[in-house]
Image (cartoon, rainbow, N blue to C red):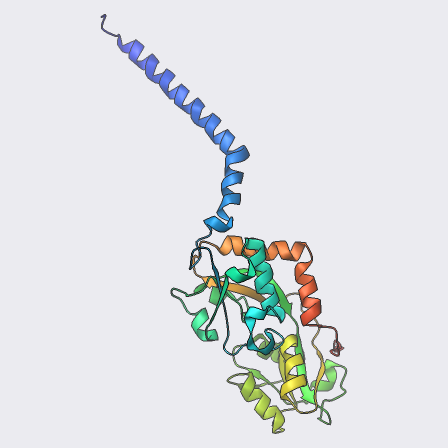
Length: 290
């Protein structure tokens, strides 16, 4: 057999490189046109989801969980705004109701870094940049306006404008967007409480004229917690609002899929229907004038 010349070897190498490059090009083109779409789609198929328990979707909420988020502290009933949202997302991901498992967590425990015993958690978690450093969030499933809770006969009952609240004593829970709203939208110095429960106690005792909370909570407090309670009004939208997201562990493999499910029920009107049914945000809560 004749000894190959150096030029022949170089030519063969060039031909081989060209052939491999061509094959890769065809492969990448084919993948970009079809295979990648199939892979992306398959990654959100129920069988491919990396859930805490295979074949199950584990959802967490608070203990107890309150109206209107969960009715009668029974999330498995699907009654209440967040109960209904949870099952709508589960259905979008391919899970039937009997494949949903509920667990309970504290609010603070859920937002801290570390492994979680749930696939996603919903208990009115506001999406913030600070929290994003420790956990993942889905697309928002609710944007909550702020409202002022008071009682019949109070100093601010019947007020219709922010200007009429300049001398009011208003309070909110520490670290909340409600606290920011008192300072930035109403322009008064707020009284700060450890939580909403402490604020409600102060309201009942006449230590404050009104408690600022998100509107759904305002419906609950005025209807259940505060005797002769009422909603003075809701603050005008600032264009952003307090957005609630489903909370997942940091770097969860299903964050994108859960967000996609929220986006889907938003786009098809399911979420709007749930909101209208359980929150009735326009009922008895007029927007306060400037």
